[in-house]
Image (cartoon, rainbow, N blue to C red):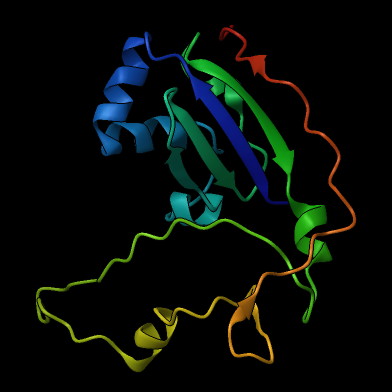
Length: 165
């Protein structure tokens, strides 16, 4: 099961301010959401990915391989909801047109033996301006994908994190 959590953080909370100022601190806080029994590679096993959403209020999107334990966050850290992405992921089939939003942050892995690597042909292809969600029209320009006729159900409302026992 893959889960996506949307956390609306309390900007007045000292732990929130500290986490937003230091990505390592934020990572440590978010690792509290996953099981302590994740083995030698807990982040990889947990499937933890996160990003801050742009906007006036601090919002985090957190993806995990299993449902996170939002009660493991500090008391009054914010409010959140978690959705199971499994039905969505299972509905993706080859050839299906989908609409999506992506914000990419290109990175280059550097090692001590190769501090200035050259881009591979695969990474150059990944930077191609053609999006897999568009199809070329006969005139040569990309046409936007059609609207999905099956809108998803409305998500549950936000609930505050319960205080730890």
